[in-house]
Length: 143
Ligand code: 5GP
Image 1 (cartoon, rainbow, N blue to C red):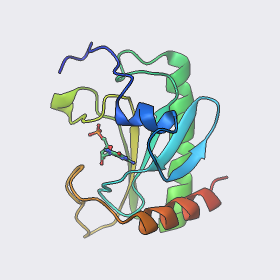
Image 2 (image 1 turned 60 degrees about the vertical axis):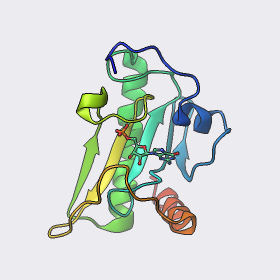
Image 3 (image 1 turned 135 degrees about the horizontal axis):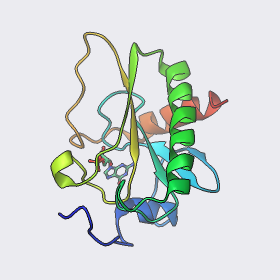
């Protein structure tokens, strides 16, 4: 998988943005969309994506990058308020060897607690009603 791979309009996050696939929405604005990760590495694991069709950090525009980090910060604050973690990971993987599995750029917002191991990456589906509850609680804590 090349870092300069063309954007695939049928990737799952493109379908979520077009409303063709479901997602537990946390937040959206003109430039970004945030929703629960369906296979969370920890309770409250949220994804932030730009509406811009970018594969990774290397074809993302500066304007979309700015919008993404603003939304990531906003979501991280709300995740912190909701789950009271000891730490929060805000991470982005560009390219398959870096761990990227969905080729529409995204930031992960993952709460961390001392002494609690993270779940494996993209491995175990969470129940829809739990994701819906987490999404509504995070949304309720957005500033
Ligand atoms: P990456 O490995 O590309 O950094 O992260 C992709 C993330 O998307 C993974 O954490 C995975 O659990 C999540 N994911 C994959 N498919 C779906 C989906 O259909 N819906 C949602 N909400 N998350 C997904």
